[in-house]
Structure formats: C-alpha cells, structure tokens
Length: 183
Image (cartoon, rainbow, N blue to C red; front, side):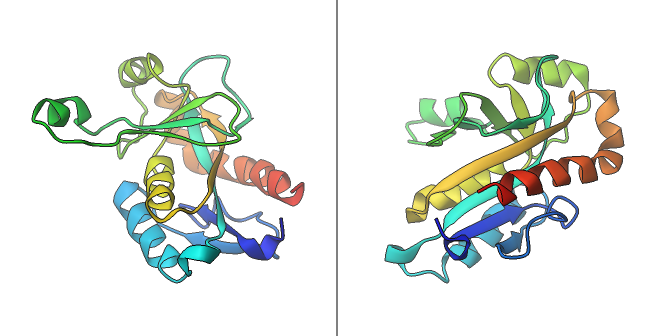
C-alpha cells in the first residue's frame, strides 16, 4: 500500500518523533475524547469511498510481566465505560472492537493513566495492554468504514514505574518508527 493512502495517528508529538517523513501524521492529544474528536475531524475530510488506512501508533503499559516490546492488538476494549449497566437499561453499546491483522493481544483503553498495581491487576483479567486512545481511534474508524491498525509499544508495567513514562517515550517512538519504515 502506498504511504499516501496511510494516516499515522499518535497522541503526542513525542510518540510521533520517529515516523518516516513520507507518512501523513495526525497528532490527536491524550485521552479518548481528544482522540475521537481529532479522528472525526480528520476522517471527515475524506470521501467515504477513499478512506485511508489508519495506523494508530503509541506507547502502552504491559499488564502482564511477559508483555514487552511491540504489539498489534486484535481486540480493543473501552475499559472505563459502564457498558454492562447501560445494556441492562436496554441500550445497545459498543465497548469491544475486533481489529483485523492483529497479533492476538487485547488492548484496554481508558482515560485513566494506570500506575497503580491494583488497577493494573483488575485490567489484566481481561487485557494484555493498556493505553488511553486506541479504542477511540478504532471506534471512529469503524463508524466511517476506515480500516484501522493499532501498533503499541510497551514502556512500563502499568505500576509505579509508569510515572517514568516521559523518559521512556523516545525508545518506544524509535521502535514504532522502525515498524512503519518496514511497511
């Protein structure tokens, strides 16, 4: 696929620092709301028959000790959304999306920056990784029929060490940039 048909999406400039220059890049800002609004605005610029492949790159926390490195999740969950309660009220809500061409991992997305082992352990029961934008980006793509891939690099174990995240972004950004260059 031509790089002109790919939109690379990252939450922060730091995460996008090593994206090869021939890709179109969108920086959304952090969190689900910022990501959803930025994606909706950007995807609205494309005709429905000519949507780009959206590749969301970014850092994430590993929810299990053996999770490190780069992942392309197959499932993304909206972990801080009261979907079960809303379903009991009779509403049809989406809190899980399946992503084609993934590696089998499950990504949990929420607005909570996970740095507490107790919160991590709760999430680990249903997911492998945690971030703050993946679900919102995948949801926006799903709504308009754009293909989406999530590519995440583990910076920490979603515990107290996550508070060093700003110091770890560049290493992840390099790995993500190398993955994109290999396309």
